[in-house]
Image (cartoon, rainbow, N blue to C red; front, side, top):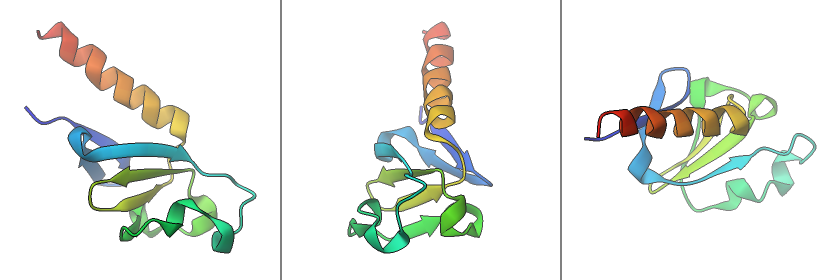
Length: 88
């Protein structure tokens, strides 16, 4: 069974494809943002502007810019596993 993480708007990604989730540093300029230097295609979830990105989700195929905070994404991630343990 494949489980998905909602990262904003209508975007969900399979948990198995997540490599890393990183907090966006609000004072970093777009030009010096080292996260966006990955050689993965970048997708801004919901076509948000760079100053609205709160976290980055790196997957096997893409780098997503999410309007959801790192803390909220981690809570969602943990919640998925706590619910799935109840069905084992």
